[in-house]
Length: 344
Image: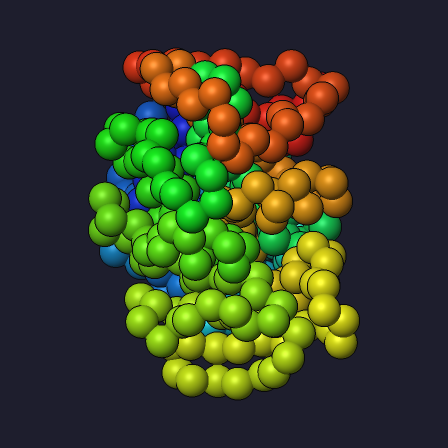
């Protein structure tokens, strides 16, 4: 097998931690001796052992480690955090070679892990499976590089470009298959945001009901606190211009002193709270605010060609992007996506 095959295995097992490790990265580790995987592990939950420790500790002392190669999709840490440095354990185990996909942008690591291994006489190779590893940890990389959450905007519209009937009337545009796809986003992202009108008119649960994952924090932008939130399920943050109040799972967060709250103010606050990923689901006014601010990293547009309304709430306009959007069919619904990390 080639290096990329073992890195792909790292990426595959790393995904088992999806939604469970935020704001930490998704990391998998594979130990190989004579072209045979002898151990593997992944970062299972926030605060738990890193992937390297979960792979090495079960076979620590095994003589095969002296001639093994360690594969990992992100640079091993070199600092004391919730767990000891992974570099120290790799050196202690006597592993002579390490293959890494990408460097860790976290200032606490940022190349120091590679340097520490090399100083200990370990051969290090970086860059195998770089693109795949970047896509896997786009939330984490974006958070450290741009100092804000990774923002995914998505909406569903009818064949003639409406996202709903007149104000106060709801309509289901997506089928269960697409709902499962959407709920996978809710499992992987740290938070989900809607405007107050969507909250009042649609009464959305904003939960993952298909994948049994951790629930995203619900964020409702409600400057004047027009909505009612006492019955909201799970952790709910009401972003407003009036008050700060902590009611347990329900939290009122005052941002700024003006009646309107900017997208930049919201993202700055979420960054300070270590929210590394955010889904924006609407409604139209909220989505357009994020589009206008160019505050997005992915766009997902679903078009149900079997529903035609003729009138209603017009869908947001899919922006002109330098990169032609990919198109992929989910039965009768088209999924269009742009991701800045795919830009050439």
